[in-house]
Image 1 (cartoon, rainbow, N blue to C red):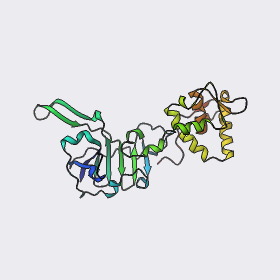
Image 2 (image 1 turned 90 degrees about the vertical axis):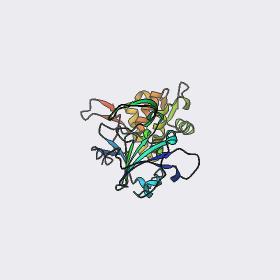
Image 3 (image 1 turned 90 degrees about the horizontal axis):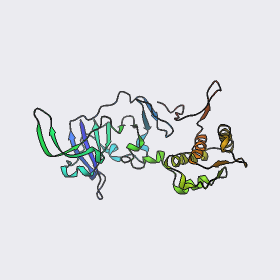
Length: 280
């Protein structure tokens, strides 16, 4: 049996008390035909049309929602009241206690307008309240496989609190620490205040990458950056960073995105990366 439940934003009360029943015996979504085309989530990967990101063993993750483990078709929730729709955080369609479709509800999906309803006959409603249902769910959790599927991480951070740690931004302190590394020389008054969101995310990834490298791996990566970006090499053999673009190139190098075409004629930067073994 299918049920649609809503998660409310409430200041007090247990998590279960924030879940309300909206509808039963309706089908808002069906499993996409292309769900098998999924790639293990990696912030360095850009999806092609018809692809999904996936996170396996989702129930073991710190941002897993407990109600997914506890849910059964017999679970009873209080009915959502009309005056509560402005407090909806997200809706979840529960299909046979196995497949859960999530949609974040933003202000643009809550419509309170005068409308003319088209059905068997035209009807005028001076105080219509509607929840707009997207064609595709923001996230799909298949309990049987314990896997979450999604297309945009930013679309589900409000549903699964903490999942943004998969692609978090470096803090100002972390950015300053990175820029103070002995292989970097700042010039032209460049500082952490000049680092925008995209590079803060890359810095968070780069710091994790470097922490997993031994000295030989670091030297290999830095030598590659020097080969592909000689303009970054300072007189003391460090990398001089004067602009955001300089920093971007260095971070791409640490992420090992530089490569040369097989015929050796063209040097390139990979805009998206899929690690072998990451595709399902």
